[in-house]
Image 1 (cartoon, rainbow, N blue to C red):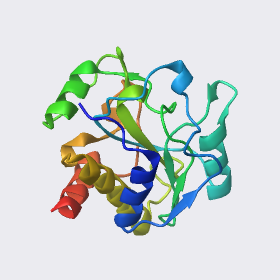
Image 2: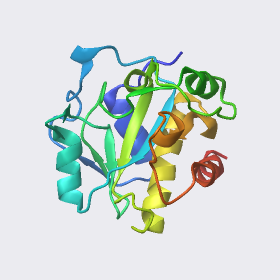
Image 3: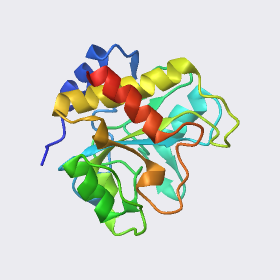
Image 4: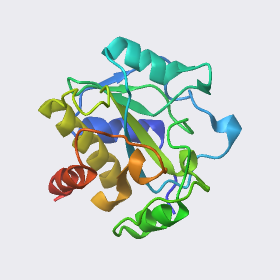
Length: 196
């Protein structure tokens, strides 16, 4: 069981991880905590945005849309590797997913198939949206992939977690495909390398 980092510790962990960080508005108090608890936290979840353009992507992830209020994550990882912090606390990013996957993340072991949507992921995961169309053709610049790995490694390091605590949305919720364009196995290898 891990309590969420304070916003100050979270920001410090990202900066100590060598990341360029932009703080967007009232990100430290912008959350969905009135809809339920945030924590205990057990891992980091990676998404793609299905958007183009950093400014519009950050705005969407901060504010949400008509059917899903923001924040839609804690941070947006832009194509240039910059991390834009848009919220802190409970965020609308993970939705309901597989309790067997959550148990595997907690135990830091290989993931089972995600075949049910019974467990509140917004409560248990830090969420990062990564700017990409998610069509399998939009490229993932190396600087962005490295930033994704650094973000995840920074949060894992702060909590004493391994790379097994990092999952893709597609590994959590049946029917999701994100992030598309790289494998989570390869991303976890990168993260493991940084943690070593």
